[in-house]
Image (cartoon, rainbow, N blue to C red; front, side, top):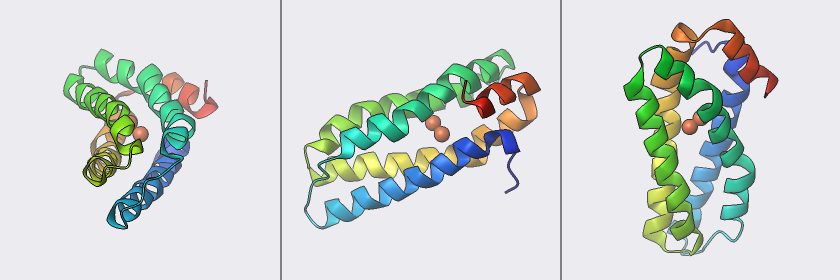
Length: 132
Ligand SMILES: [Fe+2]
Ligand SMILES: [Fe+2]
């Protein structure tokens, strides 16, 4: 899929999120916990979520795409809550966190980002690209 260059930073972070999800699933399958999961969430995922919540979602809501914004907020809330349980090493909680993260990335790449490319004003996409 051809991605607007101004969203490529966020898209490459999606790739990192999928790598993290696979590591969590592998650890869960091996009966191990991931000691650094919360730290990686805080450093890698939380800033990404905040960028989406600060720029993309208000822009989509202003353009009338409320369902896409609501789904994104719901996924972020689920993942923020689920990381606590996943950190404790329960394999089911780890799998729930990782599979929701995979689904969330797929949803954003297939539905949210195409809508952003279509609906958001250029200056807003430029703010995302600057990491403002
Ligand atoms: Fe994202
Ligand atoms: Fe997201």
